Length: 350
Image 1 (cartoon, one colour):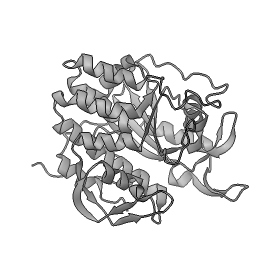
Image 2 (tube, helix red, strand yellow):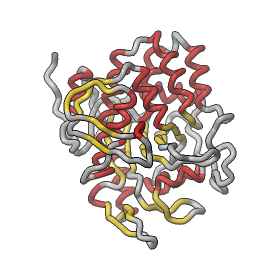
Image 3 (cartoon, one colour):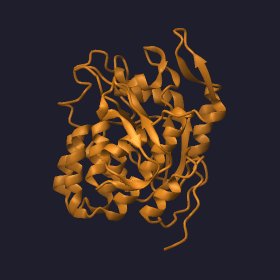
Image 4 (cartoon, one colour):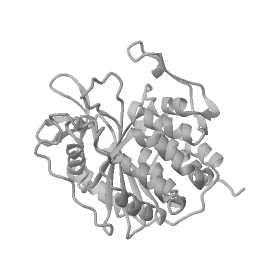
């Protein structure tokens, strides 16, 4: 076994191909065997962009006066907003706020992928709706959410992917769960949510199925709250990606897709997915950063007394994003084993 490569967990940077929430896992799956199972995979992918059961279909406030996102021609950088939502307690016809927001930026020329995880309490202007937490942008529609994030980062957002807790659980279960080092005891219980959403994990190396994996990536009830949670999510999702790449056989792809697609909505067409899969196959990981970064972050209190996250300089934030995107091109390195990855990814995430 080759020696482990040291990972700098505080920066979140890695030269491995990333997992960028649920759709990105699926894109990685497509790479290996789509040509052999084209018909079944094409059908499953097409169902992701089916708007018949869209949560945005009947919402009156969706994307009012918000333009369609820019088109991606396939040769310039493409940016995808990935949103994981918590739909608990949401009434029929309501759109839940996003619990997790990531932006995946793929550059087909530099063959580089960059990831930005956005703190959900970041206080920003939402087009036509005033200043609010950025995680509420999605309740006004996916185009509004994409425009809000585009304005924040200073880059065009062409696509979105929207999924809920069940999509994540189904995905992890579909690949047989993962073996992972839980870095500390994680306990959180609330009567309001019900016992099915309790978090109760013990420190140590263990097998995580879909439900336990969700507990791990949801946990934020410690001194550093959402800051370390976003690091924890990126680290865990990369381990899942490694397992998918190394252990998933071609014959299993249609079955895995059939289990997760009912929980995913996106404006990506099947042709877009194929183009993204091609770009992803040839690319390596560039940067993985928190937005806003710590030196540009400030705590604020709104007029109603709510605690939110402000930005010290919008100009410097956009410069930070460009510096990340335009940094040195990554040098491909051999991937380590899933077991090695899981152990190295957990260091420094306290």
